[in-house]
Length: 84
Image (cartoon, rainbow, N blue to C red; front, side, top):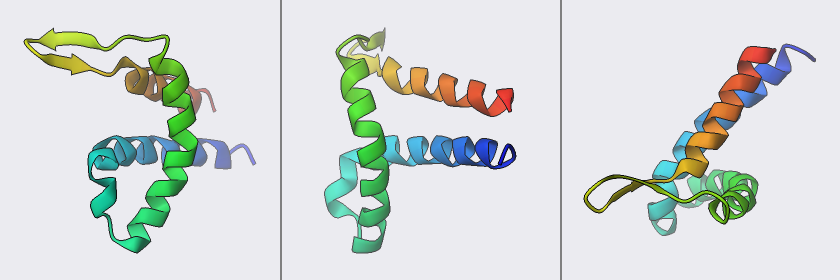
């Protein structure tokens, strides 16, 4: 059981990356990938909705902003992977 937890969090890290990259293109995904995307959307959408109300994007350039909620979730997942 203990060995499955880091694998689960690693899977969520990959899912977080793919979710953030595919979110703008979710309408163009093929049906098979759309099902996988929807699984991660159900996981991450409520979390990001909650965090975006509390964390403002950080401006890193002229008209360029970084969504800190995604970085926050990534740091938590990485810490959890390293704690097991």
